[in-house]
Amino acid sequence: MTSTTPPPRPAPVVELVSAGFSYEDGPAVLSGVDFAVAEGRAVALLGRNGSGKTTLLRLLSGGLRCGSGSLLLDGAEVAYDRKGLTRLRTTVQLVVQDPDDQLFAASVGQDVSFGPMNLGLPEEEVRLRVREALEALDIVALADRPTHLLSYGQRKRAAIAGAMAMRPRVLIMDEPTAGLDPHGQERLLDALQRLREAGTTVLMATHDVDLALRWADEAAVLAPSGLRTGPVAELLADDALLEEARLRRPWGTTVARLLRTHGLLTAGAREPRTPEDLDAWTGTGAASARQGS
Ligand SMILES: Nc1ncnc2c1ncn2[C@@H]1O[C@H](COP(=O)(O)OP(=O)(O)O)[C@@H](O)[C@H]1O
Ligand SMILES: [Mg+2]
Image (cartoon, rainbow, N blue to C red; front, side, top):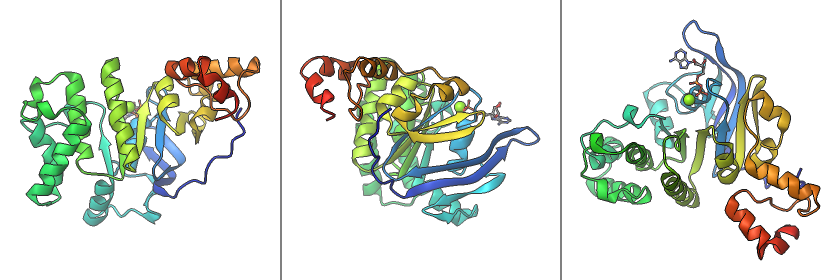
């Protein structure tokens, strides 16, 4: 286990406090959940199928309302009236898992411009935002293409571009890499990296523990005993939690454990989290990794 002191946590943008939710007469999907999404962080929400990831994302983005507890935006309780919801939805954007539930306009450009146009922004500003979002997702060439003629990966990127064009402070994505090929995943991660550099907070639900370890700063794991949050490398090295949540241990965690066992990685050194990290570490990077840089 690393002993590095985490930097002070920025204030949460959105936060669920003691939140509970059940669908109609169904059992409780979530109960007593405390979950704060801190400004500027990259957070991976992990959990097995049916653990409540999608439900949690919809509570945070205002599509569903907590049955008990509350949702805070910048520390103030969200009012579920027109004004409160508009404020929430211009701050937090959810990209749903299936792009076909999100895309509806005839062409990619029209779809991406719909949100900003609805905000009543001047035409020039709408055009600028659409252009930027299409560039970020590398789909400028698809602007005039009918959405129904796109591949799944292209539709997925178009749906994310639509959310990005709203310039949310928090971008929430439900399994954004599901169904993308490795190249599509890399391009999406590049786009997310640029967003983070621009200060956007990103929360992603995923099954992929390797992706979570590589991409996120923080993890939130939905387990039967409740939601656990913390630094991603720490949570994904907790075997009891992984077993309870029925998640696999990430590849990088196993490698880090092996290196530590053999005294090759000192406490506090950042462990390799990708094959590329490991390449760097075994080559010229090894010395600096041992020194804890
Ligand atoms: N619209 C719905 N109506 C009734 N039950 C639902 C609905 N959506 C999800 N559920 C149930 O809520 C639980 C959590 O689902 P979900 O949030 O979709 O989990 P995950 O995204 O982790 O797979 C599951 O038991 C699921 O069957
Ligand atoms: Mg889901």
